[in-house]
Image (tube, rainbow, N blue to C red; front, side, top):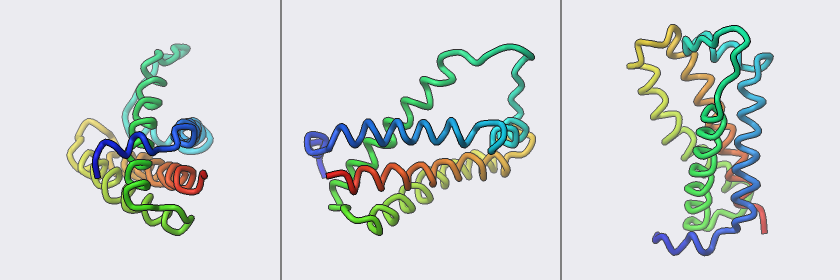
Length: 141
């Protein structure tokens, strides 16, 4: 694989998949879903009435885009173009990279009150999000 594959990507599919990944995060981390659990497990404390800054949103948006581009590159390099192939690719990337790296953070981050709960919420989002991403970039003609 070379960086030439970037020219072969369906950039509209990449942008839509990245936005879908980001939007999933908005739902995933909403208080009624996993937001309250994630906040408790991570030890994040937001003062009453204070809203998060722009970096709170731009950082995840940038990482969603980067993860989507990387997944799209792998999909193109492996000729992934069916639903079942997209699922396999997403599980390899989601579990093999995202969840594996998050697990190390869960084990060694002693600042989090519940590091393995944090790991479960965070890695669950990554795996489900990458399934969404891989499906969009693989099946979009």
